[in-house]
Amino acid sequence: MSQDCIFCKIINGDIPADVLYQDDDVLAFNDISPQAPTHILVIPKNHISGPEALGESDETLVGKLVRVGTDLAKERGLTDGYRLVMNNGERAGQTVFHLHMHVLGGRTMTWPPG
Image 1 (cartoon, helix red, strand yellow):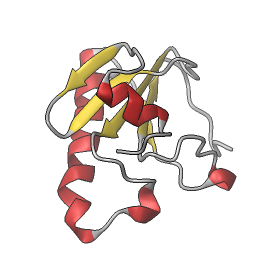
Image 2 (cartoon, helix red, strand yellow):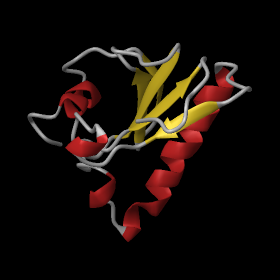
Image 3 (spheres, rainbow, N blue to C red):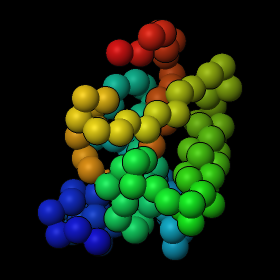
Image 4 (tube, rainbow, N blue to C red):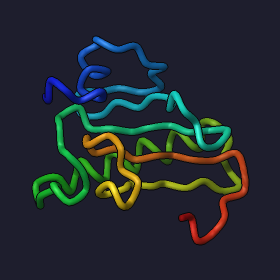
């Protein structure tokens, strides 16, 4: 855990969140500044700074993030499409340096995204 990380503080219960799912490895909650009608963040409970910091031993964890995200999208009726996004670094739009995946849906997504 990182003492300065907002997501670590959410995991520890120091900051409230609208939690949608949690187990020993993963926490999912609604984004407080949604960019789509459905905007969920799925994060690992252990602090990893971002996609670039992932190692071979994290492959199962990343698969679990994707599975949890897709399950939550299905539960919310996003059958006509949704987007899964991970940003890596400031230039890509990463603002919280704790690995997280955005689940965005409920509206038409444009391409290219940025």
